[in-house]
Image (cartoon, rainbow, N blue to C red):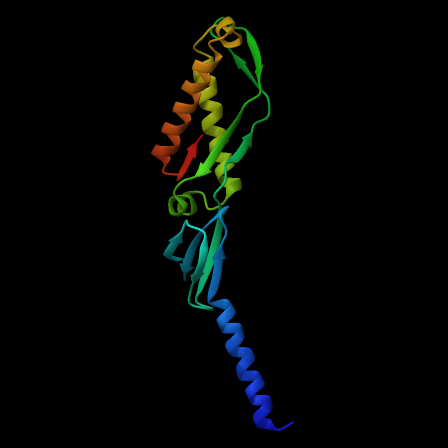
Length: 164
C-alpha cells in the first residue's frame, strides 16, 4: 500500500468521526440541552435530528415522560391526634429543561427536592384535618390541596418541573 492511500484512509476516518460527532438525535421520549464549555447553547424539546459542534459541544438528555416519585410510608399526626401511616406518590414531568438542569441537574436531585416538598405539604394539609376526613370521601379534595401546594413550592423554587 502506498503512503498516499494510507493517508487517504486516515483522513476519511477522521472526517467520518467528526461527522458522527456533529449529529445527535432527540427521541420523542427525550429533551436535550446542548452545552458548550458549561454554557447553554441550545434546548431541543422536539424529536428529530440536530447538529452540534463536535468536540466542543456536548449534549445532555433529559426524560420527557411522566416520572414517578414513590415515597416511603410516613407517620402523620392528624388534628385529632390520631397517628396515620400515609403512603404517597406523585407523578412529575420536566417542563423547562434549562431550569431543571441549572437548579437540580439530574432526576435523583429532583426526586430528593420533590420528596421534601411533598412531605411538608402532606404534613401541613393532613395535620389540619381530623382523621375521619382523611379516610372519608374528602380525600380527593385533600390530595388536590397537597398537589397545589407542591406545585406552588416547585414553581417558586424554579425547578422546571410540574406535578401532574
